[in-house]
Length: 306
Ligand SMILES: Cc1cc2nc3c(=O)[nH]c(=O)nc-3n(C[C@H](O)[C@H](O)[C@H](O)COP(=O)(O)OP(=O)(O)OC[C@H]3O[C@@H](n4cnc5c(N)ncnc54)[C@H](O)[C@@H]3O)c2cc1C
Picture (cartoon, rainbow, N blue to C red):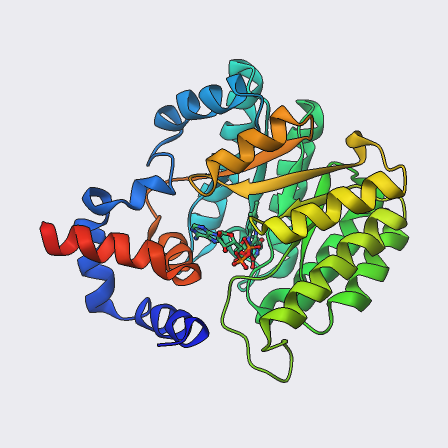
């Protein structure tokens, strides 16, 4: 089966109740915690400290997707306020990453914005930073709009732009006008061809274009990829354009290419690891499996050997 087809199959299977039950039951024993740092903040703090000791910066993501009501959205807000307090108290070199749907974007965008403002306010008070992750394309416009509204008064908030979406070049131009701190990613969701590039080579070309546009505009850029070719092209670009090491950082996911993370730190580049934790680890884990058949093979081998 081709890799794009396998990715679609895994992402579609992730919605099945049976698959969810199976993976919830056996996932922790079968390697899910290669990608997730723990189910609680307390379990996660030592993981962050260990990464910090290796010279790696962190962004903490509290996993929580799916059904949201006002009370779960308030709960997510409270959890993020507690994470920011813990970052300060424990002296962690860490920011936070969050999803607007967790804060109730689909329910009431104004209320979600209100919750986000409180979280960003706490980040400002504690010297931290809040990254708004980008979700599937049903939320792109609302996310860009909310961010554009908030950013002028709140520099401690950043956004994510996905290179698989055709609209992203135009979004990136808006972000440069705002002087926004942008994380560039390829994109992790299933998107239809009219709005997204289907060809991997085009996604990669667009990735490089977006990174160079934003660095060239003098804006802080988080280059979030494990793709060695794109990391090399970024290094070549910053060297040839005299862009300082403090103007960008590489970002990678917890548990993916830790060797490359350490190598980049040893070469003197800033590297931030995205560390997810929490009881709702299932959708995140399934997206990581979908990205790489080798991870699926590892998981199935363990399932078989159980
Ligand atoms: C810090 C960070 C934050 C992100 N935030 C978002 C977000 O907000 N919204 C969003 O849609 N997506 C997000 N993503 C996910 C992103 O969109 C991609 O799905 C993911 O990064 C895989 O793409 P890649 O750039 O690594 O390149 P790929 O072309 O997928 O992979 C390049 C190489 O990286 C390695 N690799 C990639 N994935 C894996 C894996 N799962 N296991 C082992 N090796 C792997 C392999 O060697 C592979 O050949 C984020 C990714 C990172 C690193």
